Image 1 (cartoon, one colour):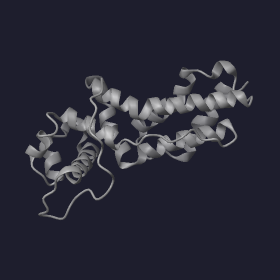
Image 2: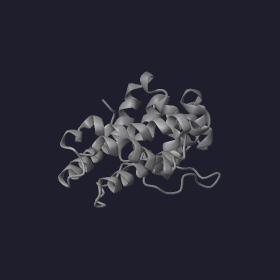
Image 3: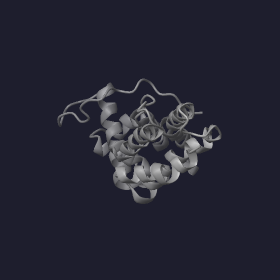
Image 4: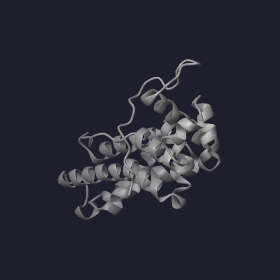
Length: 206
């Protein structure tokens, strides 16, 4: 079960001026930003609490007062920083809806937060709590939107009724994650269109 955290600090300046003593939300923003930078530069295995503290310009004690371990710190960072997906788009066609959904997911992986998850995803088997956080914040919401798009496509006659299934809905997001893990960001719009036109749409057509 994912450990719930207090309300995430709002977006804003990450690092205060040198010599400024920071507390509360300002310090948390700096720490979360430092975690993302460390994950992106050295990876999850090599990331240390000491390295995060140095990058956040704070002491290790400030980290250990809030998070007893590196895993706890990374889990809270992901829960606060991984963006949630938006509403189900309605472009008028299943292809248009899929393009909006999968392009948004590709853009998320191209962001600093998304790029930092690359090393984390490689450690999911050893860290089930982090795996659950990634699934809850990244995978499951987008699969639910994909299911909504498939249902609406079936109502318009663009999608076979038996293609409206969780397995089919998982294909696009899983292919985006696979491309992200094997090729890294950014994932081009051309690649997203190829996934839709060459893989997903042939599975859906009546």
